[in-house]
Length: 140
Image 1 (cartoon, rainbow, N blue to C red):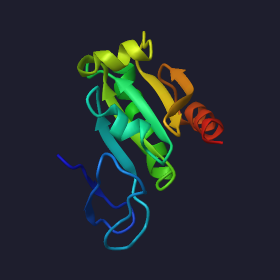
Image 2 (image 1 turned 120 degrees about the vertical axis):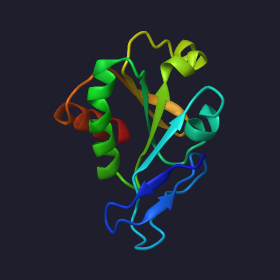
Image 3 (image 1 turned 180 degrees about the vertical axis):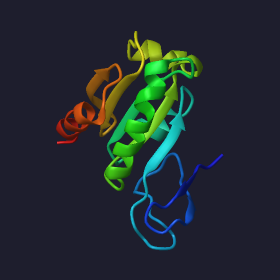
Image 4 (image 1 turned 30 degrees about the horizontal axis):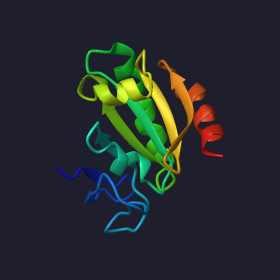
């Protein structure tokens, strides 16, 4: 299923592919769209590691309270960084191979990938005032 994203500038609904290169733009106004998609064990290479755009990976679980608290913060950061960042949400319960591969012992775990490699990791929930500078540093 291809995610549909509502343009924050004009309200147009746009289909946004999970993988591939480039950056999603609104079909109506041409402005950059927040790129927020789901990923997992089977498509991690396509969605994260082969991305030409830096990727913020959020490893979470639906039963995790801190995960639910940090999710809106991450979506806000993805909207602020539209055209510069892809946010990939990975349900840890549905992606045990990735949890083992990256030795994830607590959630939420956030990882920034550039050129297919992890360059920064943050464990735990935090407000935007903490995550924004961490993300900015990881993107440099």
